[in-house]
Length: 348
Image 1 (spheres, rainbow, N blue to C red):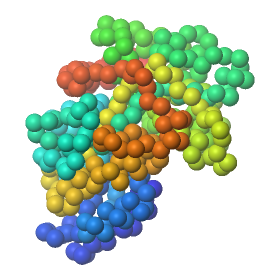
Image 2 (tube, rainbow, N blue to C red; image 1 turned 180 degrees about the vertical axis):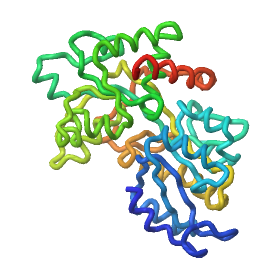
Image 3 (cartoon, rainbow, N blue to C red; image 1 turned 90 degrees about the vertical axis):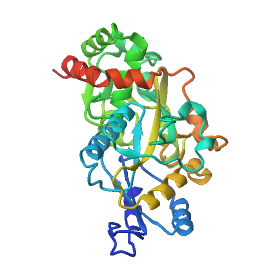
Image 4 (cartoon, one colour; image 1 turned 30 degrees about the horizontal axis):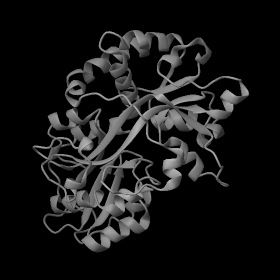
């Protein structure tokens, strides 16, 4: 994954990409889920003349917070992975400078943001949803939950693991989904019920999905004992694509009444040392080749009009039909207080 790309980060100015003017290395700062096919990134490097260096910086929430703290002397030129749950925090803190990437006119209208200033470029979209371990529910003669209301029922006690809303992007997305569903006066009461029903909270998606969740390949190895996890609608294809041999059906399913729509963005960092390289990289992120490469690498959907999705991805990871959404302004106005209240309610 990205670690293999970092080896490509040599440059004409000494290799660190920090030289003034003419740096041929462009550095992408991202969360840990960045991935791209070698031939696709190689074609960009050949055509643009830039070498790509990738710095992975933890869960999306952690990566955004670190980027804000280091904005005056950033680690790179482009940041990828700020989503609609945290976008206002990045914009309000001046993380990005204006640049309208080539291909922005081909982004589907529902994914565009910051249209007046063009500080961010939409790159991908997906749905944060509860996943379930099919084998567990089959063996226990239980019907898997379908909705948020189902999760607080006694038959699902001690089965769900989610991520910390204060440090994890999917954890925050799940919290926002409950706020959208139950409103300002109802989401806290819902979480009280969820806590009473034994929800487990861990720091990151990696820990929740690959260690605690009994349905994932990683969770099976780690002897995870939670058959419900907050993850993505596109997680089941991962379990098919990387299995050997590939099964005819995914071993995990999605509770489609629990979903929250996520959009991820990238932006040119305000104090980027190589802004021209950063602009070229942003153009690349909207290119047809990259957009069509994403589904089977990062397991997300493209935002570019006309970009094709592989059949194995759409078959096992269909998009949620009616996900929860929240107006970006409402997220901006309430997110920090919601997280603070959630932390007091759930973690203490």
